[in-house]
Image (cartoon, rainbow, N blue to C red; front, side, top):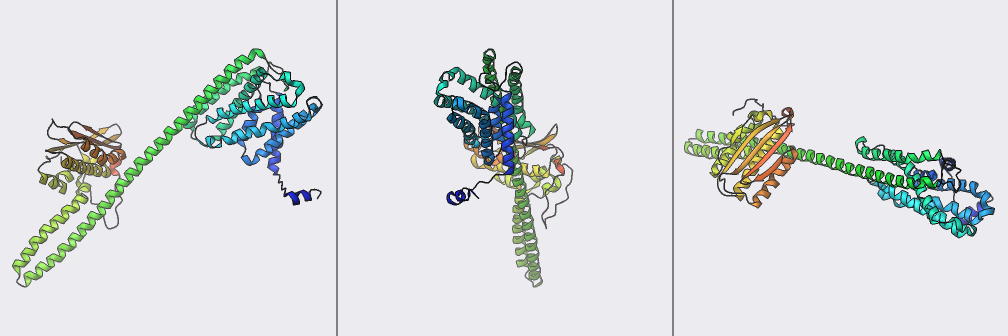
Length: 487
């Protein structure tokens, strides 16, 4: 009630969260315990300060600031007559907000997979805290100007830096605990090694007078600790960099696998769509056949035999052309007899023969061991590469294919090229070929090579994929497939 005027006139609203109060008290106790076992050249509270800021959300930082200030207020209250009230108040309230500002400025960097930000936070926190301690002591404690020196500043900075490197890496590993174990190996290895190196400093504490007061310093060990600080920095930098690039490698690998899966899915969906269209064309052709046959029978019954024969002749030519186009859209015989039968007895063989430039294909192996999807990919690839060569090059063409089996993989090798061995493919032909065949080569773990007068395509898959079939669409039943090879 006594402060109602303050809330009413200044609109001051203060809400204390019980968890935040407990956090402030716990941090103050931990800070006190860490300070009592620390020395100037290995100052554990500096690491505890950064670790607390990394672990707690920003909305709880005010409780951490209050906890540290409460500890300093209790610890430095007896020093007011000696050093002055201004130093006790200002020096106690400035350290934690300064380090919190440093951590806050690194928040975007911290969100990335590159953990080198920790070294930046440690270095800046050590420099800023040391500068504040020494600067405020010089400004607010006129009687202690002699105690402020570059040697003391270096000692305090190294001590804070080592304290941060001793505790903060553990917090970073805790923050990354949900990351895949493989991606943490580089970081964890370097962090553990660096902690072992810095842990040598803890052995110093057992042999030094750790009063927690200024002056706890061993000059004989300080030089070695500077070397250890540099060694720990290099190891942490190595671990963070290794983890960062390994994470990028795994991410790129995952994106590559996803791209391959999406490309294959697109190709399979395209073949399924072509199959449905071919089936629809055949149904339309059958309906036209029945209708024209009825008309021809009607004309013949009325004595118009000549007109009926002419209608049947025209109907046979048009019906054949329609079925050829349907076969070019989707070679149905590939499902029952395999790739090689579709290439030699299908509509595409007649289309190539009509150009008078494509020699009969030389086919080796048994394509029936391959999955239907891979056979269709090889069929489309052969059709595309021949189309490119017919359009962009002159002279006769030769087409060869053979199946391969190596280890746990199987596939097919397609070679298409010019019959003249002294000619080479034009750069435009090479580029068109890579564009036409690249997607299927990516989807089926293959590659495209253009050398001299020929184009070589390899498509692969894991063995046992021959049982994989397209899901038949309604009204488009799959034809029974024979396992007999005709070649």
